[in-house]
Amino acid sequence: MASYDVIVIGSGPGGYVAAIRCAQLGLKTACVEGRDTLGGTCLNVGCIPSKALLHASHMLHEAEHNFAAMGLKGKSPSVDWKQMLEYKQDTIDTNTKGIEFLFKKNKIDWIKGWASIPEAGRVKVGDDTHEAKNIIIASGSEPSGLKGVEVDEKTVVSSTGALELGKIPKKMVVIGAGVIGLEMGSVYARLGAEVTVVEYLDAITPGMDAEVQKTFQRILKKQGLKFIMGAAVQSCEVKGGKASVKYTLRKNDKEDQIEADTVLLATGRRPFTDGLGLAELGVELSERGQIKTGDDWQTNVKGIYAIGDAIDGPMLAHKAEDEGMACAEVLAGKHGHVNYGVIPSVIYTHPEVASVGKTEAELKDEGRDYKTGKFSFMGNGRAKANFAADGFVKILADKETDRILGCHIIGPSAGDLIHEVCVAMEFGAAAQDLAMTCHAHPTYSEAVREAALACGDGAIHA
Ligand code: NAI
Image 1 (cartoon, rainbow, N blue to C red):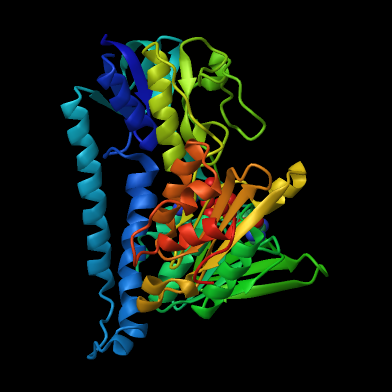
Image 2 (cartoon, helix red, strand yellow):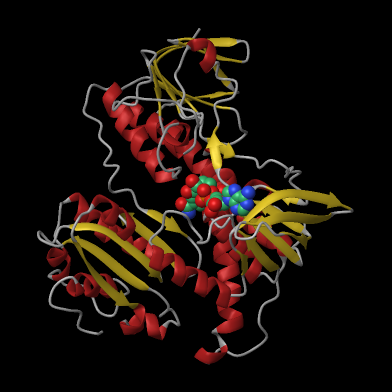
């Protein structure tokens, strides 16, 4: 029986980061992973492969729509789907091998197989039982199903199947206008599919800033995506490789249906904790199946910790990474900390959408006095040069103290721009602090500064 200070279950961004940090802090560490490769959902069937397809399809979009205007003439590229999938696979491979390298470098044992926890202090993998002073569960999440819709990963796919379709569909129906639906819907729309998104609510991307939601939907419509809003999907029937999705319009209970070659079910994810033996151990779960933890990520069972998608909070790789580092620090006797108020969220469509902190709706609910500084990318020279002037930056700051409370961006490189606001928020900065910081010209980041200026005496280029 091998004996460790820490065994981490799961090698996604939560698990592998926790394992590396534990090892760096001098703890003898192993990580159990049942997949053939490390990296979890994010590297194998999530963030990383979807970004490869988003990048490739965006390049095609640029060639088709903007090259000629820039004086780049010639035949626009055609799609070699097989090669695009190979490119996606290469991207996955280099990333998953990178984690393997980091495990070796940090002397972390990869225990291959699926883990269960027979009791605190022990982890069983296959016929072997390993000892661990502490266990971190980082088992992630899986697509949550929808009653009446059976995923076969061929005609009706989850995000996993959507990354490796046999061919580009002519007609695609996406159920759910959340992050996955809009990212993957964008990919296939750019590659030539007629994409219709069926969404239960009246706005896309629930929880986002309302102005961003509206602008985002308008831009996606311009890109060719169609939307059926306020529609509750009831069932999906597959016959001869074609699907028929039945839905009810919430406003009048009218039933209708839409046909597709491929249906993507993207109605959310749920914690994946199957096979761990949590019920037998008495580990407390929430009604939604999330593992309950305290501030130190310890469950109600001493020595068993949990992080990432398996616990409460946004299901985001970087949130899991932060918890992984912080939990490792707690186990090493330090003070691990995650600032849940400053976790950015990004949608990698084109343009990108990014936000951090509070939305206007949340501030109104809290009754907090705030001011808004907004700046359109139309006033940003670099964005105009790059055909990327759609969108805006909006900064919300406390009316009295000017402290930054939130930021919402739709526009070029929004996912990178958001981070100067995250840093500012970590430092408790005022909008004026951003406004007084010299920003290089011409960059997209000037739009962030201008939004900060708009919280005070006014933006210059508006
Ligand atoms: P989501 O929770 O973002 O969106 C699901 C959507 O489906 C909602 O708009 C909901 O109203 C709708 N819906 C639910 N039931 C429906 C029904 N019966 N008929 C029609 N619409 C229905 O879930 P999604 O996109 O599947 O993503 C899952 C998780 O993965 C999220 O937590 C997300 O944050 C995370 N993720 C994050 C990414 C990123 O950060 N870029 C990328 C991909 C996933």
